[in-house]
Image 1 (cartoon, rainbow, N blue to C red):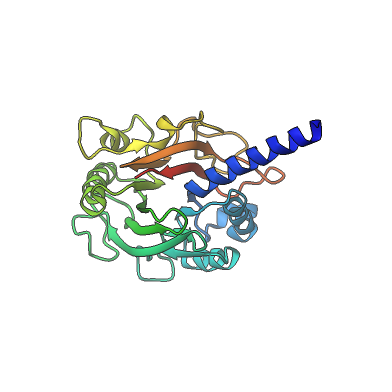
Image 2 (cartoon, rainbow, N blue to C red):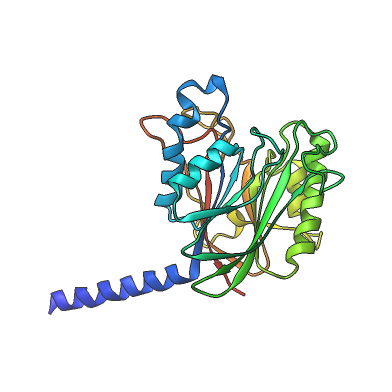
Length: 286
């Protein structure tokens, strides 16, 4: 009798977990660190690429926004993630051009549309720097259909400039405008490395509630409490260099956040990148 009771309970739990998995999606933003920096030494890309892929696969991630991904890294990730494809182009048309690409699990998601614009005064000028930026910066976006739930949603992925204060401010304004223009009332996920802490001007612009275009930080509305470190930049150090995040996942329009985490695992003290990936489990509720 006792065995039968426990069997029934186990089946109910399994059924409940399976039902939740059918409705939820796993998303991640991940600055994977560019591949050619000589100072990285033992932390060079060849020693890290399997670690990056393993984090994506272990957490059964359906959507991954990567930053600082050089063309060779995109090739490596495509090989290590055989069930994934990606949306996006390089910010510069050469062998060093970085991607802010969106990898997606093709078993779960169907890509309906994709495009890239530049964070500059002219968003269609390939390779153009905006304002006082040190580098060209881009936003890649994609429109998906969930094969299980049949719901559709947008994903935007970006990497704000690390030097230009004006560029980060104007990029925040431009991002809000374009997200509103493109996704309108459709559920939307916006992710990336914003090179700004929560109280810095760009994040304040993005999350200002008095602005009807504002976005919501997924961490603040997660059903379960945040898991992991607060800071997202580690600099390949055993402790956080900052206790505040610079990598975020924002949402807009009918997106529920179930879990939010900063993933800080290491392999014998070695990191997968100089940034921790930020992970959410979410539900498109529209």
